[in-house]
Image (cartoon, rainbow, N blue to C red; front, side, top):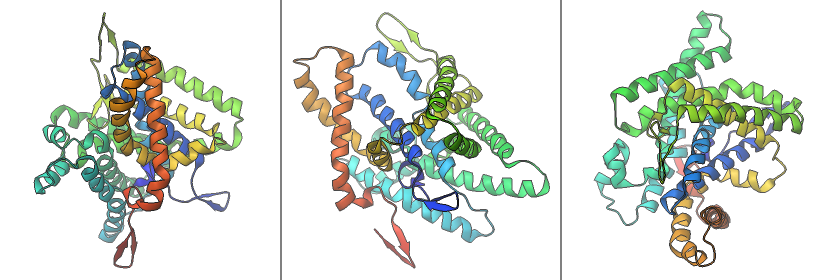
Length: 380
């Protein structure tokens, strides 16, 4: 499912086939930009204002990616074991093979024996700290597992609807709630990451179903609404989502510190104060970002970067390190304001990642593009 971070499947709109949905690409790169902003805190001292505002982007920056998967992806109805094998084979080539390649790239100084792969596969909390790579790439196994869960759930919905006449969107909504509650129940009994992102996979799958739920609505908004209406609608959703985000993850501000009594983090399965409130916040904020992205389609560089959002998610760890170690110390001589430093840090890191994209596209596409299958052969 590189559909989340890389390639989208072709879509039929108005009888014709188009390649990618531009506003989804733009929504993805906006969300990934906030991932880059969020990771600045690990390389640069940040102030309380940054930590307080962090609640806002944590409410959507990863959720948008999962919802985008539900909007753009299609899942077959399982009729035989072959259907499962074909689906899993496709997702393995799109997600897990690049995942292991990046494991080596991000841990070139590590010990790459068999225990390395075992630690990555099991994904337990203490092993993740040793391996380190899941600090950036946790979403690959989680998205993989979310897709597998969604595949079986879609098949289950299909057979239930054959017996009971229920509207498909209602089924998607119910399935979202079931999965998010089930995730929360597992979270109470299991403290570790769980093998290959299974625990967080239920949360990711719930968000994928939310994407399926809003697909038709977004199509109407895109075709029928003017830019002004889209902007107002996105602002309205933000006006609902932001206060709810602070309710779900209240911030305690002391004289010098900011703490989070209720953390939100999909990867580690922490959803804040309430799992249903988490879903509502995620829906409002993610929908706001997606609708706002419809107004930015003419900004071609955003859609171009959106196609390469997977590279931004991985390469930025290198660029962040370079900026923190070699560039920011020189800038500090002239700039003392924390907010300006954060902005310059982000801007320089983005420019450095963007500069590598043409090189990777030409010489190392296997780093982020699915390995293709022709007959019994796999090719890059």
